[in-house]
Length: 191
View 1 (cartoon, one colour):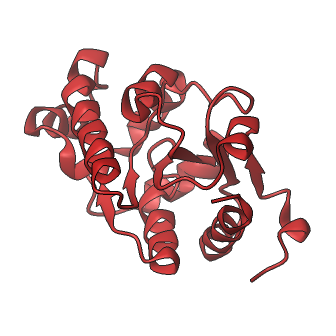
View 2 (cartoon, helix red, strand yellow):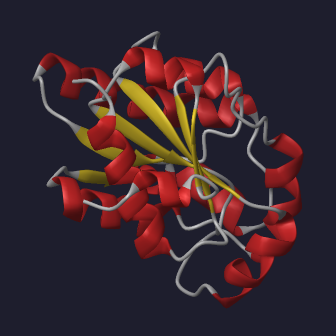
């Protein structure tokens, strides 16, 4: 296991996460292009947990809108958020752990997904537009065009590190390192 104290600058745990203890569901969140899928899969490999791509739960209409560069409204997002929340509830009912990728840009979205559960932790891939834009421009095979990044940052309400169950990771660090650090920090939380 790596020494957590050496890398505190790349990982921050919220007060609520420290109080809640080790979560059973991780929602890897952040704006488009921040590395949600990659980091989620790297964490899943280390923990042996299943991963669900939140993008796979979008309606066809949502994908069509985003593909055309049209930002989603809260009404557009509602069925998508409900599908993610249903998956989280199903894992809880089965006493199973898992990871979902989901932008979770607003606090109300995160509240809708977690539904008050302390077993749900939002892993926030935090970075500036300058950090993320080059990644998004190089990405291929994804429906979200790079021009949507501005609207993502306009919508983003950063998680409250006192009131929400959150682990924030600095996207400027290598993704393997972030996954390793996330798992090390999770392991140190009380079960």
